[in-house]
Image (cartoon, rainbow, N blue to C red; front, top):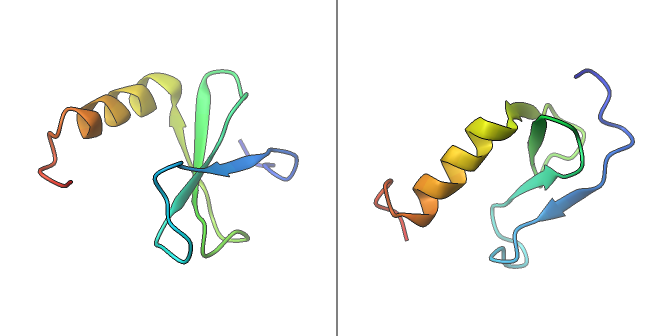
Length: 67
């Protein structure tokens, strides 16, 4: 996935103004691009949808010990 210029990025509803946030792009088949909201022209990481679901599930389950 080389060109992400046409995607719509969104922040988590848990993000606060001025906070350290990530943004994700929805609607791409099979992948979830993720970027640093403080550096919107910087590189994005692209995860498979399954890997992203597993990560989000682990966060929600408290598996990383972070609240």
